[in-house]
Length: 147
Image (cartoon, rainbow, N blue to C red; front, side, top):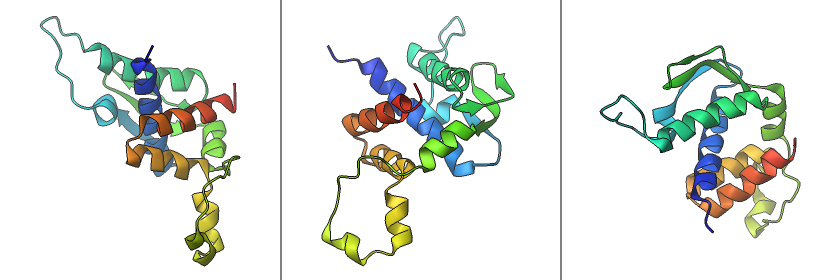
């Protein structure tokens, strides 16, 4: 059975963490539409299940200590959000399983090599490549580090 909602969760969580990493240590507002795309409310004023799942991911990341935020803007955003110490250290840490090597690695400066070995680099690459499997692997790895 394909757990597509889990793939969506991993994608949303990865995008949220990346967005906050890119603005760290400044607090910022993270909008649901920036993470999962635009959504139209139905005739009753309710958002789609996909949209609500993305919003739920934001709240879950806060509940689990990966981020802090001051308040929500209805079901549209979290305000004054910032990565927690735990999440910042996790993302900026060296990835434990460095398996990718190439001949060009020998020519890169040590600072570039070190940056390419971080969890956040792996996360960014998985998001950029659009690979659900790659994203699932890195997010599972990151979330398992502090379970």
